Amino acid sequence: MNYSSKLIEEAVNEVSKLPGIGSKTALRLVLHMLKQPNEYTHNLAEALKNVRDNVSFCNSCHNISDSEICEICSSHKRDKTVVCVVEDTRDVMAIENTSQFTGTYHVLGGIISPMDGVGPQDLKIDSLVQKCQAGEIHELVFALPSTMEGDTTNFYISKRLQELNIKLSVIARGIAVGDELEYADEITLGRSIINRVPYENSLKQA
Image 1 (tube, rainbow, N blue to C red):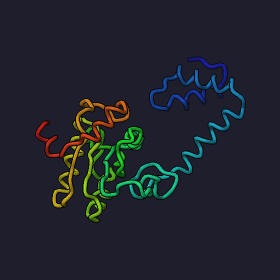
Image 2: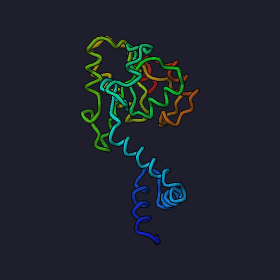
Image 3: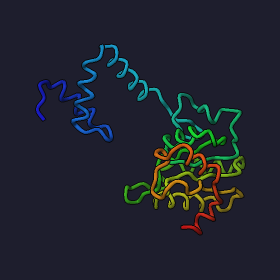
Image 4: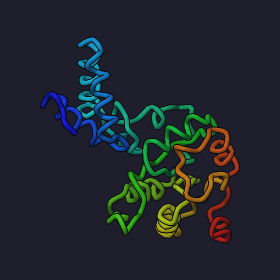
């Protein structure tokens, strides 16, 4: 693609590095920003810089947070004995939008996927096991994708916790096999959380 400006070309190349953004869409976005007041683009750039430089992760659940302990973990209204295990922050947001879960979360930062070079050591599994060993958690709710990788991760964690007296459950299969939580509608996801089943039952269904 020929550009009339090297500056435009550089901006398009950077924007097109974002997931799901091709060069044509990137060009459209860059040209859109050019039409806006300078303040608009400067505010956008500053907001992105602040996200990169200042957003951190909760020391307890590993969710994205503005402080050392996120608002969910620090809330007195949340049930600290029930922990929902999710792949990433997007899943926390999806479940929170249902308003059906009152426990806390544990963000693994991914799922076990040998094909992608992701093993248990690359995830926040050890810290989850440590929290369970502390004796404050009574139930873990697996809310990982209903894929082979998600099921493998559930199974690995269950084996790590088999000596502990902790109830393991999995969200009901209202979420279609292979689906990601962030794309599920709120009603379906909310019902899947409420109607969660014992983890061993999900193994029988597999």
